[in-house]
Every structure is written in C-alpha cells, then in structure tokens.
Length: 505
Image 1 (cartoon, rainbow, N blue to C red):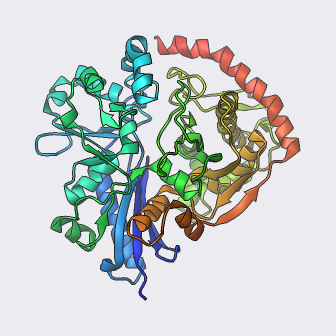
Image 2 (cartoon, one colour):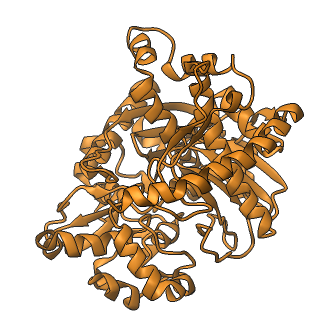
C-alpha cells in the first residue's frame, strides 16, 4: 500500500515553514523561507501579504525537490499563522495596505477608548480585553488615520486565510482565528454587528466562519501551476499558529499545558471551559469542547533576536562566514555565567507588556550594570529576563486556580538547551521537549486527520509525536531565581513611572 502525505505551512513573524508528514506519522521534509517584518515607525510592525504567498510557493517547491514523491500523493494541506494579522482588500481583492502585525502598538489610543467605553461589553462578547493586539482597534486606527485607505476596503481576511484565498478563492476563516479579530460573538460563534459597528465595517465584509478541519474549495488551476500541487489535494481551513503548536506538543487533554518561547512567550493550559479575565488571552482548542486560556509576555524570542541584531553583530559576522550559529555562540558565552547573571537584570518590554501589566508604555531595560559585567552576563540576562516575565505569567495562572498537570516547552527559543533549562529552573517545574513541536507540524497533523489517515486527535498524537527530552529544574538555581524574582518585580515598579513619562512626551 502506497503512503500518502500531508502538508502543513506556517506563517510567522520572520519566515514561513512547511512540514511534510506521512501517513505513518513520520516527518519526511521541511522547508523554510524568510521574509521581512517592517518597522516603519516606533511601535509599528507590518508585513506584505504577498510575501507570505511567495514564501508558500517557495516552500512547496523546496519540499517537492527534497522528496521523490508525486504531487498527487499529497492528500491535504493546512495553513496556520499568527493571529490578529488582518489583510484589508479592495474591490479586486488586492491588499490596500501592508498587514498590521500583532506586535504593532499604533492602536494604543483606540484600545484605551474601547477599554474606557466598552470594556465590560467586549469581555462579555469576545471573552478578551481590548488591546493593540486585536483587529478591532487596528481597524479603528486605519479608519481614523488613513480614511482614503479605509474607503477602499471591501473585505477583510487574516494572513493565513489570505494565502489560502490565493490558492482556492474561498473567502473563509476558522472559528479560532475569528476570535482574534474581536469582531466575534464568542458565545454564538458568529460575527457581531454591534462590534463591527464600532469599527465602521459590516459583517458581510468578514469571511464566513468554519471549523479548522473543514475542507474548503479546491485549488485553482493557477495555484496548481504555481505550487506544483495536484488539483485533488484537499485544502483545509487551518487555524492559528499557537493552537497548532499546542496540538503538535501533544496537549489535547485538560491539565496539559505548553510553555512557548517564540516571538511572544506564552503559557497555555488546556481547560474544559473558557476563562474570561483581562490578564488572559482565551481561545478555543482544536479539540471540540476544550479551550486554551493563556498568559503572555510580548517580546520573548523577539527580545533575543533584537539583542543579536544590535549587540551580537560579531557573532552574526562569524555565522555569515560559515561559522557557528550566532545564537549558539551567545548561549555558549552565557553558560559561563552563574544563574542570576550576578545581579544584572533585563526587562523584555521592547513593545510594552501583556501579562500581568497590560501596559503598552513599558520599555526594555538592563538594570544593575557594573564594571565587572561582561558580554556573557548580558547574553544570559536577556534569557533570564524573558524567563522572569514568564514566571509572572505562571503566577497569574496559579492565582486563578488553573491547573497545570504537565508542561511541554515549545517554540524556536526552546531549541536552546540553556534557555529551556533556565525556564525550568525559573518556574521550578519539570517540562518535556518534543522531537518536533512547531505549528507547521501541527497543521500537517490536522491535514492527516481530515484526509482520514488518523482516527482523531489522540490517535494522531500517539502516532506522530515523540518526546525528545525531559528537563528537570535545578533546585539551587531555582532558589536563586526565587530571590531574583522579587528584585525583578521591584525594578518594574520603580521604572514604570519613568516609562510612562517618556511615553507622554
């Protein structure tokens, strides 16, 4: 019996990744294509939607070149991407402006207006608190600041749905992505006219809502020519990158959780009902009836990337000359410094912070710098600063009584043995690292379920996922971080008024 294959493709902050999965549950190939996120002004973050489609085409060609299979053996494809990244389309379904990425802070004032006038109602309808993360305040910003652009908007999609629209011309989104728009009545899973009115749009400008595993329209002839895929390949609705990572980590039961070191850092426990709280970002799970309310620190791996790009240029030059990866060089140096970085602290508030402050005016800082501190101390302090912020996220969940019976550490940052050990030491909990846990793998798994290769979510997890490592906390280091945590919080409390004053100038 010949094998069949399933393709998952993710769209993130700096690149797209594709994963090819077999009906035996084995990863056959992966491919990555980078593209930029643009920062035209302080606090802004934008992407060109067409970059994402070009990356999809590139990745599929790379996959087909790696594996000697016929395209007709790829039975299904599912896409995922970062939530809240809306693509505004004109009457010809062409983007009218760059997509506003979810880390963008331009809609702070709009968010504050929503909080002051509609906060309770928004929490009731959407299960989430307004902030610049969400599409609703972003669209209000476009209406108020780019009226000529806003007049041209006829339809609104989201990044992975736009890419899929390029493949099959099906104007749809999934029920999990829809929550990220803040136009959804989460109680009924339908677009809310009341919420759309706030932004000056109509519900018919938004895509129809389907389940992530639903099979949508087939690939167009043009898409088949451009990608090399077969017209018989099923096209799934797909979902958000975070829920696909949760699935890929094997977290499909209540009490399981994920700790994510990606652009943002998140801790997401699996629950059997929605938790509605201003400090949580709450979404449905792929598994019907389950949810994953999560806490988040806004700049996780993004902090280390910023640090590499600004202060790690020497390491980057070595990497570009064929040497060791820049992150690995920085990790090796950081390992020479003891836990606590000898009282050097980093706060990763480069774009404000979510949990537990919901404060867009916070800024990053190194505090406690002494003449004996070296670059090694700064390297380690960045990793520890993000981990301290995750510790604040962890404490919020504990205070709410949300159980975490087991934890998987996921995301690009989790590839660093040092960083995942720091997180285990910081939180004082045992974690598992899967062989593969990225979102494109989760999307490929979902595609396999839809194509009938796996009988359901649990069967798919059993047959496709594998534990790579168990990370146990070092109690001595945990004690250091418990003491350091109090200082970390005190630094925030002392500097927050300074940041607010700077933001008001």
